[in-house]
Length: 473
Image 1: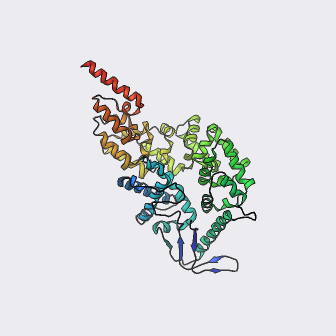
Image 2: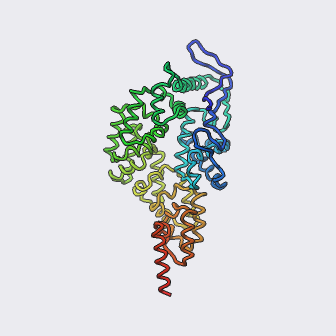
Image 3: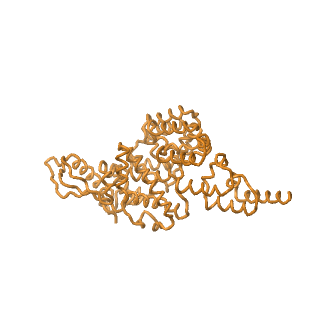
């Protein structure tokens, strides 16, 4: 059973106006479900997470990725580099917890031995950090540094205690409301409707903890019209729980005054209306942003040289680009790529997700890696222009081992400039086996032929080379 999120008040006083005041030390308790350090998780999975399938090297790399994600998240909240770094240094247990959370979310990926990209790690952990921020507010740093027990230092004033106690009471009331049994012996109609559409009670409680207003949305006026609208758009019923978990605020938006006009506005910008089901599943928050926020991003894309058609395709494939700050994220990243000689418009079109990466934590280390191995800045610019996803891979667990194997392959280093997509193929599942077959056959294929051909075409290409070799002899 899950623990209830709450704050224990050892000494408190109710004033005549109903406000709860405390000046004593407050113990902040974490929900066991959110902050379990066990390898086995409860009802969120269909079985235990087996960490034995993850190599120690990968765990180390993932900890570094988790630190980078947490650092950026803290800086986004206004924290300086120095303070964020100090917090990270005090948060080893919490970093371990984030890695376990990552394994929980992507359990199936680990079971088949597929490594995660930096973007996948970020997209898995950021919503979780957002949920913790909503729960703990200004006390998040205390929670992180003192995980799993986060005592709050004594306050000289009662302001923060009153504020947090009021917020906490609201959360508890909201969670209690979704669990209430009515006179008929059943849950509220809106809760039964949500359960009918794939959510379970624990998921509804979790959504309510993060967003208490969700408990008060009416069935006929809010929840049902939005869900039926999503289903009419072609959203599979199985996707409804994922969408509502990502953005419960959707159920609070007026269909006629906000949701539909926003969609028409985005369609006029080029979003493919036949792809709405996929777009909403990928990033449901898109429909909750203001028109001004969307326009700011669109103007930036035009400024970078994208056509109207290209902008529409970018929004369709990567709707979360709207969430990136133009001045704090998109423009600095564009300037960085321009310094490498990259055609930013082409990169934005081919790999818009790259613009969500951290310049310091993700982009610069990969660039430096190739510069240290003899490639010129122009070479690196060409590689990223041809394969923007290059920067989304883990340096330690993807780029380095594949580079080390490449050095044994008897190809010229210029081959990677021509075909940087090499880093996107599985080392154990494709690169090594195919190279072994080619060497055993004593023939040579271009690097892109070695990896891009289908299995049958690869066999044909090798046989053709062998026959040509035999005929020449």
